[in-house]
Length: 210
Image (cartoon, rainbow, N blue to C red):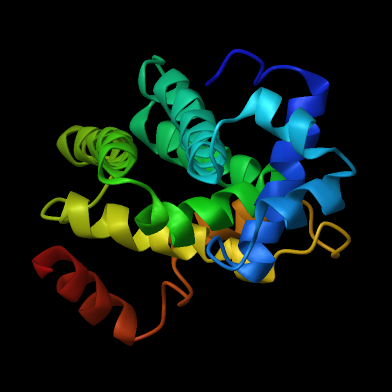
């Protein structure tokens, strides 16, 4: 039931449910918990969704759609591969920090969905990862990224690094999402070792053979 998911009341309910699913867990959160926390009656809740699983799917689906829409725009642009990679990381950081509860639920509660809904989410996740890998592949072919770099392993490494952001990011922290994205891209493009450091050449050799 998706007839009213754009209404402010539903958005409030979904936001409250996302926080509860993240902090208490999906299975430990009851419909009563959601009603009490959102300040709505059961009738109001069931006007928007028919089951708790539907609400979970809507939350997870919205999160993966949000991050995917931004990546599609980056991938289809005429930007150089290096700039595409930078903006792809920025997009991931911005969505995760704006939808911290929702992306946490996506990462941890997808397995709580029905088999049908899991397949839908996993298909979108795989499409996202393939698109991210395509940006890396393009950079390898153009020579902007290291030749011999394993794009899929690099993709998983980048996404793993950025996804962990939901565990420690605080909106009231000292770094903005843009500053965090800049640190991540600096790590990707420059590494943590000085170019004159002896291990750098060996590290580069290992990365190329990974």
